[in-house]
Image 1 (spheres, rainbow, N blue to C red):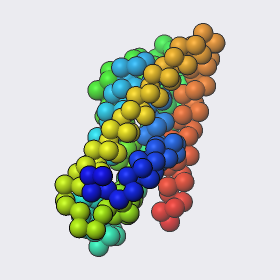
Image 2 (cartoon, rainbow, N blue to C red):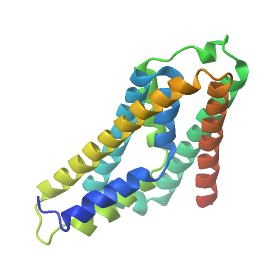
Image 3 (cartoon, rainbow, N blue to C red):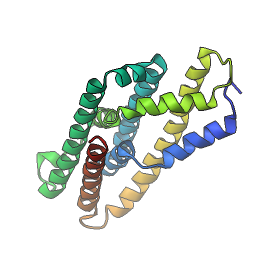
Length: 206
């Protein structure tokens, strides 16, 4: 279908990849818990844009450029790691500062979108992943348009899944908001998770 080989397996693989937690997912859930549905949807927009940029880069052959220039790849990766850890530390500080500080003030959806986009771009290996993933499901002799259709599939499925997470996460967050200190604990856990992702990426990058 659409020049995609084993279409059901292609869709299933995308769904499985969505279930694997990562920094982008944490950014979405954190934004939703912090500032509600609008913030969560802003984070979804930023995450989808980051993934789309990486898919486009993969299709255009940027992965080959990064592979040919390992210094550029390493520099981009270390920058992403540092930014991820910085956001995590900021969340930890915000949780410990209490409700009366400027850090605890609500953020608009645009700010959450920018933050999620930056988090989504922390791992340039995603380019290489898409370069390896797409050819697995390309029919022999498939037209270039097929790659565009594959990108649309990934984007739409990711969007549906992540919007669902926002709606479910918001309902859960509203229930938990009645319990004292739950928001601060949740922010700390999300911050620790982001720092943990950064440390793991740094260890993998040695």
